[in-house]
Length: 237
Image (cartoon, rainbow, N blue to C red):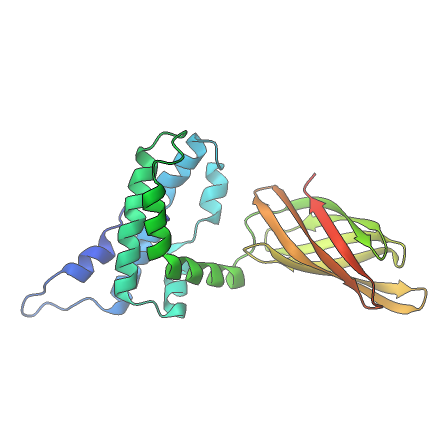
């Protein structure tokens, strides 16, 4: 559910009757109307900030844009009827959320279930699109540890474009540098390469990060090119 104003465009377009000479809206027209609605998160982000569930700036930064929404819908080939059905359910949930007190956690459960049922295709399309085209909505310095076949520490920085740079202190590699990438939904892979006692060695870390703004954390597993493995965790200090 995203945004609350300018949101009846698709529903209205689908239900209109056209007189002689009137041009019916195209699929692109319907997608444009839906994307305009979906991209407007101002009122909901302000509500989340008032209820102290998310900072308004973080909410607005993570919200899909009109261009991203339209591209995601087109990429998945969602039809106008699915968009209209989703928009109707999302509007209902938006209204309930904005009219509810911050402490009323159960008030909108029926609206939420209907939204989840009607907007699954839209949400999946957006998640897939954003995960490939946008970095995670958090960034900043971090520090972590890993253990298993060997134990060590690492620290670094996650940039706003999703690029990850770090330095690891490793029993097998000493002090070595690594790089990686964090996708929009937090999937991450980073690799440290260097020279060990028996020649070239690499440690590959995979896992998931989550957070907002400069606050984030994550965990996962690691594997060494020589066969070692284990787990890791990191957190923004």
